[in-house]
Amino acid sequence: MISSLRLPRQLRLDLPLRRDASGRFLPWIIALMVYLAAMGGIGLIWLADMLSQWDASLASTLTLQVPSDTSQPRIEMTLHTLRQTNGVVSTRLLQPDETAKLLEPWLGNTVAASDLPLPRLIDVQVDPQATIDYDALRKQLDSIVPNAQLDNNRSWLVGVRAFALRVEGVITAGVVVVTVLIIAIIVFAARIGLAIHRSVIELLHLLGAQDSYIARQFQVHALTLGLRGGIIGAIAAAVTVMVLVPAAHMLELPAPITGYGLLDWRVWVLLVATGIAAGAVAMVTARITVLRQLARMP
Amino acid sequence: MVRLENVGKRYGADAEILHDVSLTLDTGGFYFLTGVSGAGKTTLLKIIYLAEPPSRGVVTLFDTNASTADRVTHTSLRRRIGIVFQDFRLVDHLSVRDNVALPLRIAGAPEREIRENVPELLGWMGLEDKLDFRPATLSGGEQQRVAIARAIVRRPDLLIADEPTGNVDDEIAMLLVRVFERINKLGTTVLIATHDVAFARQFAHRRYHLDRGALSMPAENVAAQ
Image 1 (spheres, helix red, strand yellow):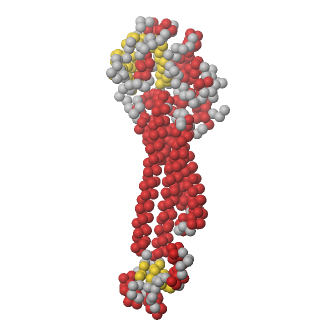
Image 2: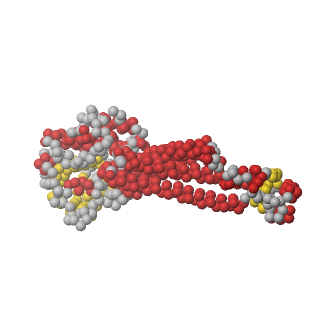
Image 3: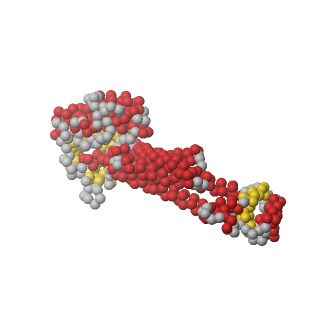
């Protein structure tokens, strides 16, 4: 027979908390919460990566549209003007079939590009560090090709950033809600535990136990359940990432989602931190709840 | 060691269970508390071992006014008291060894000391072959010995036993009192509550008697003193 005397003192439970029903369902509820929080956190990482990648690529790219009926000499003059502009690194005139290719997802490949009055597109690479006077450049280009449209993507990027900010807010709120739910569940379980084991708790008090001695039993138990749930939830999130990343590759989704996946150290840090945080939140919540309740006992 | 002055106890709006109880237990003394069932013996013991506060009066334990003391002081006072409960109150899921070790662990005694002292004490109580048994598998008499072992393992200054002889035959009851006398000789003050006045009279120890909440000291105490 294995004597419980061999257990480390900090892990020994005088109260039969491990037999409680809460020990069976609590880790699974915490696992679900941790899974949601971890996926939210991974979503935040991907979102931040996506924004910074778009920022980096769009800050160095301009697109100039000139009407389809613009003559070749005017296009050449436009290209020359652009190359002379301080901060412009290179220019490239897209061929009509390249432009048609860009429209293929919307128009399909049955429509001949030559039948459509497609504008000519000029891809302009700029030095992101350079300061370009876009108003002056627009006026200059307009004098060569009226109705030429210079798009520096900024208005689009501002919209995307505002959207991303809202998504971040929603995910953060979700993580807060998950944390509050874990706290509420642990408070509920601790109160039930106190009620179930009231007679043994009274006995421990009469044998000279301080409130902290009894609270330690609950916090060790809560830590165990929290960590168990945290590990299950973190593993489930890791599996989800493993499944999502190849699927994202197949769908040709943006780079961060199709990127490193589980090879990204930040994902690992997040998974480990979320699992540990679940245990820590459960432990601290149990301790505070039990100490408050015990203070009301004689 | 223990002094109660004009202690009264009532629960809510009910009639008073104890009226103006005044009692003194000297250090190293051996006392019986007698009274019929319902006389208030258990309530009085609970007040002494700080499970219940008195409704009025002053309780002094080990020169400390327990009536005005805070929770932390109560805890340190309780650690100087060993209690043998009427229903034993052993923890079901713990082994005999761990039940007896509880007061030591609560007091923060080193595990090495627990490993040495607990089996030795249980051997002294005749339970050396029951160390890893659960209380539910023991007989009533064995459970009572475990409860006594748990009460004395920390060598308390005061040992309180509530009806320890209530459910055993006369021979075992006599043996139990002899055990308490041996503990008393080691310097522990002993207070035993029993409904059996005739049994308590067999011993030359001082006796308090409770009758419907009123405490008195019968005349035979003069002889005991």
